[in-house]
Image (tube, rainbow, N blue to C red; front, side, top):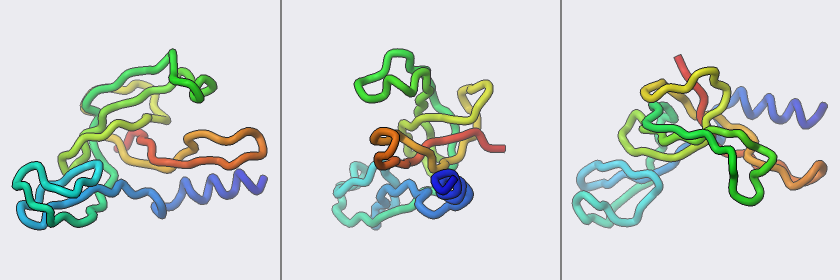
Length: 131
């Protein structure tokens, strides 16, 4: 019961639901993942940038033969998400009936994996359809 309450609390909050990249202070280019040098203008003046967590499906695939450690999760779907601000990232997509290229999605916090029945539960960013 206690674990369930913690999980539901995280699902209902935006705390920790951050996609952090970087923004060039010179040309304002955005990057994910973060960089130390801008590939557009070569500046090394970058700062952290928090993306809004919304985007669209650019491409997707369902995994049936996973890498070691993810065997219990199959099948699962991963997608290239084009964030509203421009950069693309790869993430798992959850809570969908029919996934399509161009579909709007939003980031959410979900379980990635756990270290056994009584081990640590690891959470991370995934995406789900949005309106």
